[in-house]
Image (cartoon, rainbow, N blue to C red; front, side):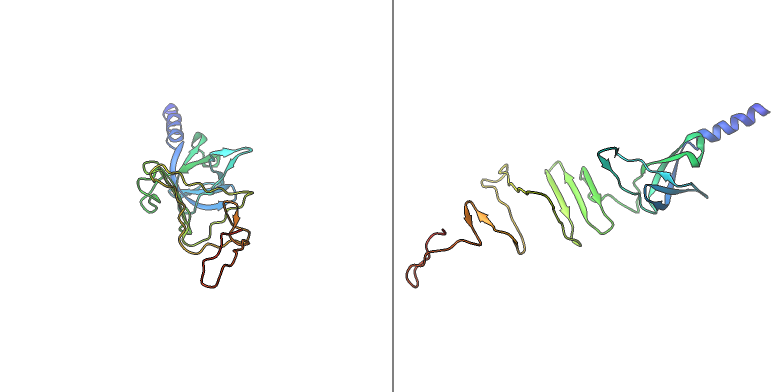
Length: 183
């Protein structure tokens, strides 16, 4: 009979090695997971990168996750990652990659149409860098174009080729005649 009891403990350890649960608390780089009636200690969550290059994203309370527990012990677990669920559908069906933030901002990439989309309707998008280049490629158009909807504002000088669009001057001809070319 003792042999059967030992086997039972071993079976329980194996059965509890990986479990589904729901995030119940998040603190910095750790989270608690509710698995049935049990709540784990604060556990680390898995990252894609964790050295000089760092990719970090806290799980959300209520998010369904998989927990790997050594010897079936909830205090020796690590949160492997989230599991898709009906309550939180994909940000863009058919897209190969996507991220949705709680404020409604969505980033998606669709390789079929080669479209990278940033939809940030509720918040501004700020790019901070030493230089920005926007280049339209004429793969499907005869003439590449950059299209802006809404107002465009510039706090610095704007040029078209070598002509300043803010500081250029025109030579005035006679009244009613067209102006000269920008200088």
